[in-house]
Length: 538
Image 1 (spheres, one colour):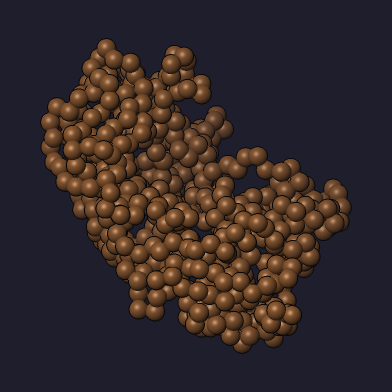
Image 2: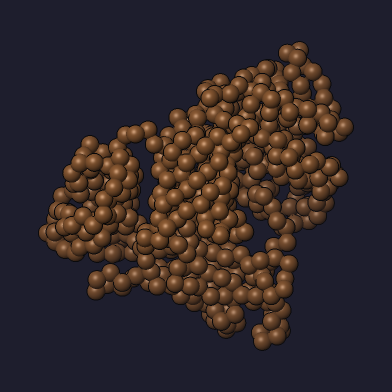
């Protein structure tokens, strides 16, 4: 059922708007959110009534944020301002604010990695002013995932000066008029780029939101377990503000995947789930498309947010679909076992030029496991796969030789911990991606053929001569057969010179055997000390 929400005023006129949200909030829920604002927040944030008879709360109504952004704001009010708010009210308030003052799908594009806790990446293309003034402490995504009026951006500069007065003494700040530049020049620039008003948000408010209940075909990857596929059923819960979840499937090695949990939807498309897979608690951060046909994002370990993998879900409408193939590559002149993933698959299987099915090992409506072979004389390249009338475009890569190997993430950060310390170790999961040369025959050009993730042997080496001298590879941590790096214990370590901590600069190395060829790829890995500031978003 589609539910209607009356919103507090916003934008310049703060007009009354109706938001259609697929099972993410109800009128009662919206009214509850306004009442919580009045009871818990109005002592400091003055409430006034606009000409349209909608409520306006000073400061609050001039901002828009993601669910995590509003959660951080409320946490700050609790810890720094002494506000007391019960857990259930906090949950309701985050829901209300995200639904009524959130971000449109288009406004989160390019920044979703931060919401999904996929933080081991180097941001590129950042505006130099933003990089120097903000991104030296925050990620650029932290800035880009909020919207404010110009005055609110200026208030944020003032907040930094009041809460963190040493900001002006940092590198890139102390040799210039930091406050004037931030307040008078950067804040207006941020208001122009990330202002409160936007066509994208107005359009999102006005359109009907998808219903996300039902059966979903899911594919993904979990470090240490591998690729998986299965089904996730989302059943509306009793109060209509979320879903009860059930997941059932299998990993690529045939072992079972099964679990259950709960999810909520914010802003009509922001899916946040928690479920137990066996005895492991997992989190889902996904985004629905405007039609409610797909959910895309990441699922990660609840106690180690960076350790996770991509997750994609496809709504089951009863039609035939090919969604993927595991693995997605085959060498010319060789045979191998693959699993075709989809739903309602029926009819003859075709794998493209020069590729044939030798034997069907297992078949159901959702998956076809088979042994296939590629003729040695055909041209390499991506092949379309069909089953009856369903088509998977360019999902099978047929190649002549492995030309290069990349390791993801290319730059990674781990942190020591344990050993009686206050914080757990921050691990990193690496994966090896293979490529073949494209039609030009040259390696490292735009037409290289991506083969996909490949099984690899893993090792760590010192990053440079200085790291070798300090024996960083001996003390900073270990990497297992799955590519998961576990850092060393928190120090000091009396076995190291000057009882240094178990930090270090390393490279994670993947090695893949491909016929008679053997290739390696590497990633830079920094093992740092513990981070005692646990943020929802960095």
